[in-house]
Length: 80
Image (cartoon, rainbow, N blue to C red):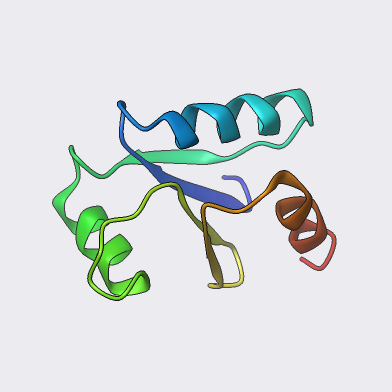
């Protein structure tokens, strides 16, 4: 299990771009498609004030980021 769970949808361009950047940076993640997992969609909505905004990343310490930049992810991982 990785230190990041990324909540996504298959049609999300921001998700695809972030996954490509993370892959190039050597960052691993677990991915959950919120269209296939209703409880994941509810979790994303709870994190984002009722909106199902993706990509939403949840870290192993329970914190989250919505549509973060790669640098923000790298900085967060350095603290875990």
